[in-house]
Length: 113
Image (cartoon, rainbow, N blue to C red; front, side, top):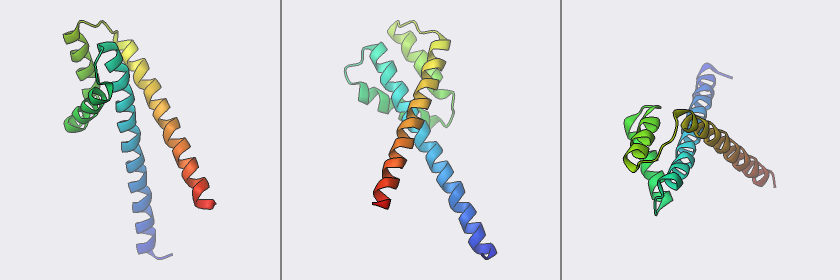
């Protein structure tokens, strides 16, 4: 393997890792948005979750989602402790990882078949 091939291979590994991290965080944000929408009694939970995910992407800050959630909860008069937000974020992250893992396993099975 030449140095150029090795460099391209490493670049692909890096890109795939970044792509998966983005998908994982996007899915986590969507799941946490659905949870929050239920607490906020939003009529369209998917719309709220999508807005929350877009807000986080536009702010390029991992803590933006927490700040947005806290502001929305306060505005709606919904009391949610910081620990509960963090717990649900962790749970959503784990759920998103499981969903992506299962999707990858199914894609691998289709590729082999």
